[in-house]
Image 1 (cartoon, rainbow, N blue to C red):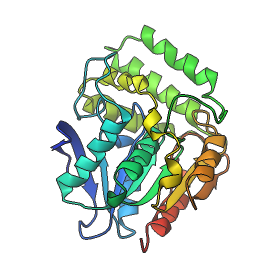
Image 2 (cartoon, rainbow, N blue to C red):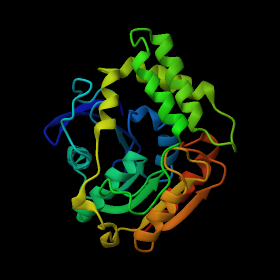
Image 3 (cartoon, helix red, strand yellow):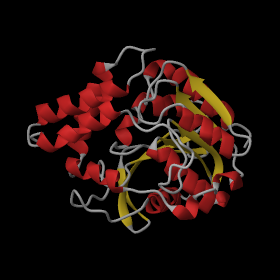
Length: 284
């Protein structure tokens, strides 16, 4: 199915799907500063081939969905969760398996808390606990080298597509774990598509303005949907301890550890990830 723009939660959201609509729905939610193209076409199709109806979409401020002026904050993580449920509404789907990567996993948690009747299961990939900004759990922070790298974005000539592509590719390289070689060809293809699709590429930095929410603090123990946590041991954005914290707080959550993987969904891990999601979403 080709991309289309729908009105979800009162805003324009770009959506796309794979597989048979009669199959159980899996909603894929990507992380901060990344459009849906980072859910690879082949990954989506292979997941659909397990007997799932797979949906991916652009969050606000990335890809072809609604964008706002860079440096402006117009929405919250809860709004992004409402958008995701609006995508389900656009497809006429009452309940779905929710799969979120990084920030997408935090959006998924909000859906599971706010819309338990819409959530069949929860899969959180390379994510962390969503709640207040008070890091009372003493979880390790993002690697300072990555923060320093992205501070250099302010000096980049964003009208130079080649320079922007190099910047994004090198940023992805920083996220790769030691188990697999960096797949530069695949990432270059994604980055090229990202640059061409984006209404306003700089708007992606608005995701950095998103903050925690006290109203969701300590809500994870109330999640009733079956939860699967998938996390690499060499994640430099959200270190592995974040996965352990999720498993500790979500009742009966299971954990798939990707030894040597970083903050990524590397093609070499697809077999394990797709098998785990297929098994987790079976019979629910």
